[in-house]
Length: 210
Image (cartoon, rainbow, N blue to C red; front, top):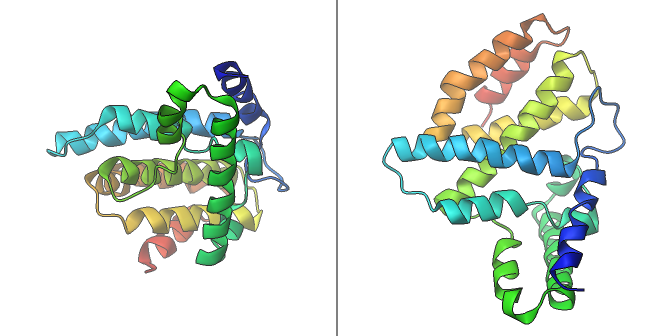
């Protein structure tokens, strides 16, 4: 009982493999994904601040480091499935949030419950921190998919993941998105030019889509 139960549960995130059921050259756990999202978010927030945007760093670290904690209870659900419809996405989010709330109410001491409810909530919203989380989360999908495509993995799941994440990012009005599209993505595409899969074509088609 108590916070020990929460700390112990974090190990479960190391055992949950992202994009289950598909051939991958390299497996990625939810714990690894969460760590990388924090790293992306730090740099994205620095880019925003360099352009005069105020960032609440405490909030940013809280929501990025804990954004997928609920997957301990429901596992990693593939993005195309999760976003098949707004109704399905809403239902999955309700289940995940309900199970997180139940865990907090069952195991966390009363004096810490408000903190845990704040930290483990869904962090993606219209705040600058919530938007940075969204971009960082999608960036890791891009990098995971890119790594597989670069090695010649022909699973359509990774093309769909790459396209979906890139389309989502390009439609967000943030300084860090502009920097990613203008400075980081071109380097990725050049690096992937020797892949048997035409990453440049896939990238250009995603950027041209609405």
